[in-house]
Image (cartoon, rainbow, N blue to C red; front, side, top):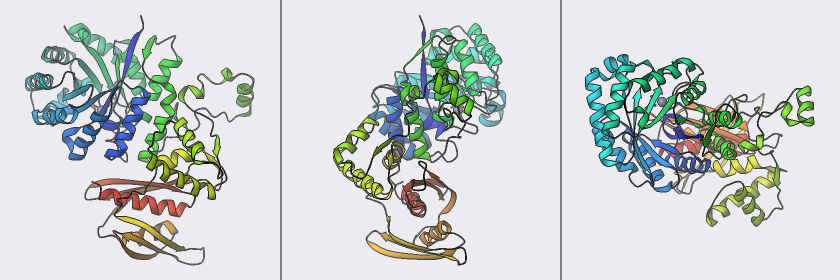
Length: 501
Ligand code: KIV
Ligand code: ZN
């Protein structure tokens, strides 16, 4: 009988740790619900002891998610584990994921502990976690640079202490597929109890081998793969979920496995993550890149028209990629709009529908054709919130190639209008510094980008702004057919996020 591969998604934890990918509680909850729809078996919701914000996000996700296990990360430290349990205990299926480093270099220089101390600590903390939570996962950080005799003994002790899942991470993305296969087989041979629990792997992509190494681990007996959407994660990222899933889906002849993933939700999940973080997927990225199903060369196009199988090894529909259909126009009614967004998988209440429908109508006045991607952008990038401290009232930009650009921005700050004026080389620069003049705090612009949501000169512009304040990063985003307005709104969205913390 085919074995089942479980997917452990760590986009909200390892993924969120990567530069530019931080998310607030609301965004994490939105993504967690989409991950549940995608069918991931385990959602790693965060690292509860790392901050109050992380604790609250894990707790909110634990209360909301019903069909996936909700895991929370904790170092092998009593206080971390106590906090992890407090955050996750209301989940339908809670899991504590505790870890300690096991390579010589980590034990000596990071932990400053002897191997015996590490072994004792791991055993004690797994026992403690298991006394609180019905499911405990143990990870040996930097396992692939650790000694196999040491790992086998350590795993046996934590399994006897209550660990049900043993994770063998390639923390620094150092191993290769053959080596990893042999490494896992060797530990299995040396360990007495490893085969009685689930083996997991967690591969980083420093040498571009995260997916290949995870697949080698499947051959060596791993049945839980830890991965992220779009492959985001520390440094070069983690193994990409969509790649692992579609390899095993497309090459059933090689990988005779079952999975619970709804492949048709892959594209929606990838787009949602991009919309939330503003971190774009490279166009030639496997599975979810914009060019992954584009046939450019005439000879390829001809082949695909005659028979798709000439150049397509999987269908775009299998990952939920639909044509960028024209959906609605300015004469479309509320009912048609509601049906459309429901068919795209969004569930929203009456009050929110009213707001979104007004935004849709405003957009339809400015843009001839409204596509699925426009609707996605309206629904996931609404930058303005009722409780925002600063709201845009109006702005004027005077710009040209023979004059200095001057911007005037008027904001509503908790009921009072304030105006900032500034001049600069270009309209966005001038507008941002005009906004700065209205603020009581000093923020630093870390990153700014703008891209069009669809083709055409009347396309929506999607602006993403990353600000730094008090050692924290804040991301803002918004869309508008006017790219300067999208940029101003995204900037304000980032500023207002500071006050939500
Ligand atoms: O990369 C790693 O080793 C980790 C562990 C905490 C599982 O992220
Ligand atoms: Zn990791």
